[in-house]
Length: 159
Image (tube, rainbow, N blue to C red):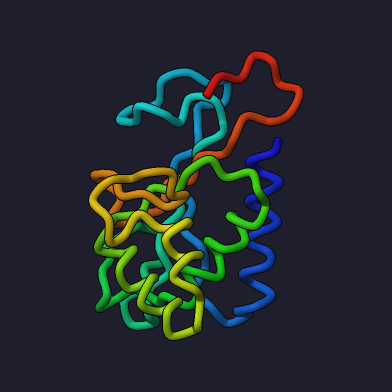
């Protein structure tokens, strides 16, 4: 329930900010009763969800996720969506390819985000992940992988 609530909240906020923006492509979450979901190592408990990056108008797919980089990424719209999720305080980690992290960081520097904030949030440009909320992980060049923290009071949930 928590994951769906955050999805509704943040996609709704994105839509309010960008009423004419492209639709959000939502990929895998989990099986209805949980358990292994090919080809994922996670996505077993309802706390993981894949969301396609938002692309510049001429590149934006309607129902699929495509390889993303500085040429086709709409950094402003993608960041607006990601920021909402980060601000919930419920995100454990976001996996975002380094080729997508770079244009996001460059965009945020232009918007006067501090280096201190960017270092706390993004792995890029460092090689090691450290405790950054947004980390590089193979296979995430066409989507954001969101992993939410265990809900409060859920004693069966294990990180």
